[in-house]
Amino acid sequence: MKKFLVILLCLIFAVSAFTACAGNPDDTGKSDQTKDSTTESPDPVETEDPNYIMDPDTIAAAGQFRGKTLTILANDDFWPADDLYVEEDSEDPVNSAIYNRNLYVEDTYGITIEVVYDSDVSTTLKNAYKSGLNDYSVAAFNAFKACPLASENIFRDLTTIENLDLTKHYWDQGLYEGLSIDNKLFYITGDISTKANAGTFIMIFNKKLASDYDLPNFYDAVRNNTWTLDMLNDIIKEYGYVDNGNSKVDVEDTYGMGIQIEAYLALFFGAGGRMVLKDQDDLPYLDVNTDKNIAIIDKIYNITRVDNKTIDAHDHLNEPPFTSESKFASSVAFTENRCIFYITNAANLAGLREMDADYGVLPIPKFDASQKEYYCYVYHGATLFVIPVMNKDTAFTGFALEALCFESYKRVTPAYYEQTLKGKYQRDADSFEMIDIACRNRLWDLGYYARWNGIDDSFIQQIKKGTGTFAKWVKGITKGTNKKISEYIDAYKASAN
Image (tube, rainbow, N blue to C red; front, side, top):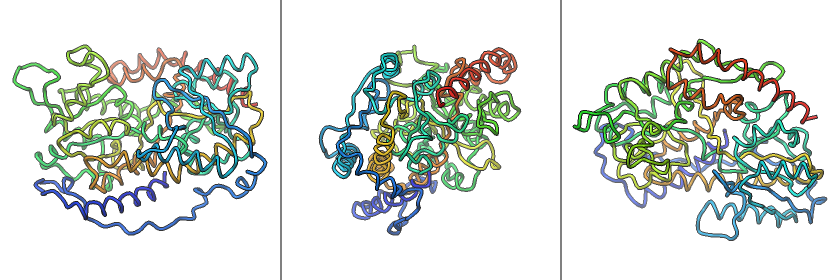
């Protein structure tokens, strides 16, 4: 999103001031990307872009809602929606921003924000619907739960909600474009939650190894549109696998890249691949069996499954000491300087702060230099917001959500980026730019989030197998998937009406 550029310029300026006082470490690297950035950024200029300003008519409507309570049913299980409520102010910048966002909205507009946490939001919503209960204004839970539930006829079409302007850019426009059906939308996210930012997939590289191998400047490659799957493959092919001396491939070896299973989709979507597209009427259809997708899968298979260039943590989950997903072999290899590259989501950057070596951030590589944009998809744990059909006070709900999202854009998102990006690469202004590129073109593919016919999991497994059995796989999933898509569209239309 464009708003990140303004935010990141603020952060870069602050970091530049910090490093000017602290001084720079000695520069012993061979590659330009290992050097600290010393370029001073000018003071950010205030923008009056109407895409980032709450509509005056919406603000003017606030008086009629004084005394009302917005009750949010929020997930506290996997990837909890813990960024909606903080009990008290603290020194933590993100928690402080969340606390003061809520306090400002409540005090300014005379409303109350109540968050009720639940480990099974889907079941609670369905039970409330069956019982005719209007206990919740909004529900906030992860995409893998929210998207399939849209066919249950219990969500309101958010495009019809008064005072909720989904065209504002503090709402995620990529989601609006990718997950709408029949020009209707049941779920949304944006600056109101940090989880979409946290769930955005990125690539990181080890600066020590980049210097040791005298590798090209990856930041310049991104800017010059040469950061592609072929460039990635060439590097990890030349500098990748090294046996640790025991003459067998294991978790102690050195690899070109480390991944987990979600990285196959990160590479696929990043290269412009799609499971599902939409027609001129905004209706989804299966589009996986294309020459472009086959070419992408060929490249991914070569990068991840040929010549031991890549270590996939999910190939080693049952090998000591990696007997659970609490610790991945691939992340350990990266932190121990045994991988040049590592694919992960932004949430996992915090876990790398103890690395001795420095690292930098990149978007997922393009298919080739002709690809227009870099695309980074969002992990299914990202929080989506829905309005239950039982909620009759939708004008107030729309207003409260709009106010929360707008204030989050001003307060929470800058705090989140500052805390997340300050770490081992806090003097690296280039990484700020790369994060902006990654988030600017976030990709939301309905096939992944709606999980029709289990295509999300089966497609990952097919990418791992390559295109040798691709035609057989497509034949096996097409009929069932098309049937699920058709049923989903029918239910979606009925629910929205």
